[in-house]
Image 1: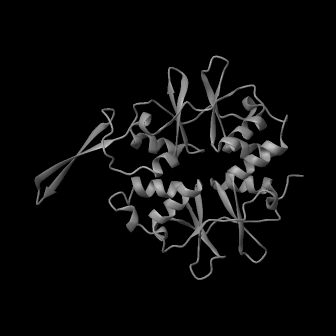
Image 2 (image 1 turned 90 degrees about the horizontal axis):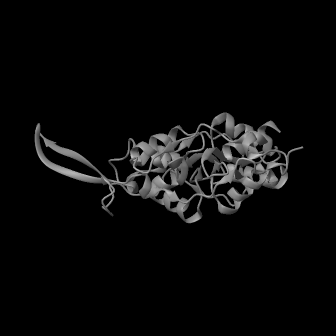
Image 3 (image 1 turned 45 degrees about the vertical axis):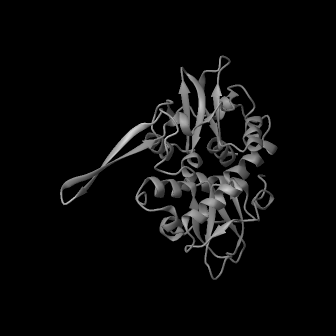
Length: 283
């Protein structure tokens, strides 16, 4: 039988309230190296109201709130309310199934009274998979052959679209058939737009200021490209590797995806925490 959620959940949960700023929430994520926060009632911090994720932050900064400083955007404006929760006594198979069904990366864990007692994420499920599923699958049995792929010269706006469409929220930067970098939502959530020019590898984006139908000014922004924000030289795994060993690499390196390559280093697909969830949910 699959292990209980209580064996793998995190009990020290980072929380924010709807009245906290998005800048405050982002600082917590950056400092703690996490991708989601539980949003709680300011008067009762054991009552989960929703979840704030990196996806919410990226959508806010590059979408409808892009015109506002991040310090002025409140968590209550962008978080996802009415969270899917799970009880600590359920199994990790249940947790994995719920994450896949609702297309989410983590679940607040509650006690019988509905009070917050922890959180379980894809990372925790991956850790359980690494420990308990050795020898059951090879990477090629689980890997995804359709994945978000970009070239080094693609703009961050194109990358953002790819990230939102990819199930794992990861983009692999490929050059001559080989993976040269990985871009995650975290990479976009922790940059500031517009950016100061750091070289000549930026696209120029011009915007016109208008007043009473007259052009009164021209502003030029420097937009980074994939090569500027990617994590270069990604760790890869070969198609025939044990899937639990690959999961162990993701856990130890704290990464969410491994490009899968053949013996010559050419990319064949990706192995991510999404594929781990699928394997656990089917077990």
